Length: 258
Image (cartoon, rainbow, N blue to C red; front, side, top):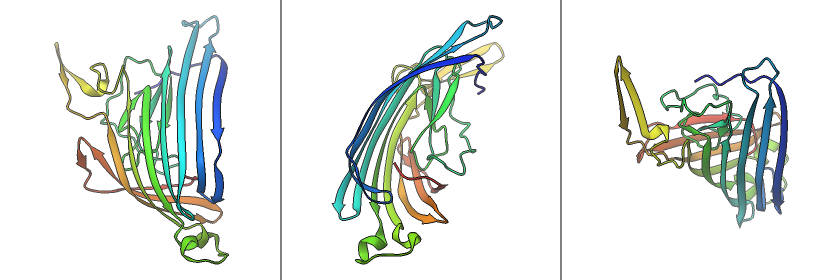
């Protein structure tokens, strides 16, 4: 799919409500709750020579995160996030992978992208570990992430640790579930994932797919500080249409967790 190249004078307005009572305990470990509810409006004004007078995009969404202490630095993290875009050139979300993933160039071409939405922009809906980008797509997405984080050496050794690599070394277990869709809902007939059209000369056949729009992933990961960077390594098994992928997908990234 090729996105439109939009040229003109951009104008935008953003509004957000942010709540944050979290407390940092150590790197990537905190207690408390934080959330953000936001809305964004973009208007792109074209020159007089353009065939189209303007293009607009509206995005609304939320991101809710809770960090629950289990024992000392051992915590549970829960997150639910979602967004919807609409307008003459909406944004398409690609579900799959993680932020700052070194293999983000790999794209799942098997998932159909709606050709009727007139997408003008694109973004990643993460985290969905166990899948490449575009396991699901659309101008809407919802994703739920659950993690257990244990800084194992800091938890077991009751004295100061000088090495950043050892002090920040963490073992995590995770479970992700989510979907992205175009149309009224993930299960609606107008969601391109639920219908596929085949053309052979003058004959056009549209049939209903049996794909479940909701996918999930689970697995484990390691975290630490290396050469001044916080590095993440995850091994995830994707779950699609009620079946677990035979092989895990390794994901290496350079950023803090949610």
